[in-house]
Amino acid sequence: MLPEQVEPRLRGRFGRPYLWADECESTQELARPLPEGGVAACDRQLQGRGRRGRSWQAEAGAGLLFSLALEPRTPPQRLASFSLVAAEAVAEACHDRAQVRWPNDVMLDGRKLAGVLPELRDGKLVLGVGVNAGMSESQLPADARVPATSLQIATGRPVDRVELLVTLLAVLERHYDAFERDGFTGLGRDELRGRQVTLVGTGSGVSEGVDGDGRLLLDGRAYSSAEVERVELR
Image: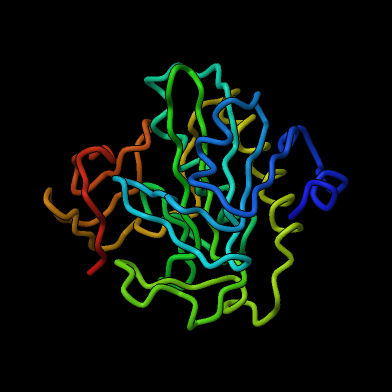
């Protein structure tokens, strides 16, 4: 994952510049000063975080943890749907069966494979990505809110994290450029559509997909991610 391993294999503008740290507090903060396309990655985060301040943990060398700096032209009020765009890009890059569980989880066979966290501050959008790459069953969190899996478990093969990173960045760049050009055009890899869903603290019903703003449609009502503590399937 060192720069000399990653940079020669980059396929586009994302990943330039590329910062690497064996250990850091959070790649989100490392990436924030970078220009658009810059990436900060590490082996181990001390304060990795997910949605609603939840922690994201991975043993050193087993996960793929990075943050991507973006400066979108899309107005801030239209950026809420970008978490779905990014999650779908990660799903596409990781596995042909991977799907998106609204609003920001990437699932594989009903287990969490990855997550994304876009954070907007002062016009800079920083996208955090965490993928369970080379973890064995014993390395996955036993007490996770959502059962987890890894690419190594799903494929039965060791994971080349450099190749995974450069593939992810190429796919993210393509999806980001399309979002900037066309806006949010829908979610294809939708794990929830047609299923009975409970939104903890809010309501329940059958998912009808997502609307043009990336809100979850449940029995005719649209829910934003800010309203929902977590999503559960029946």
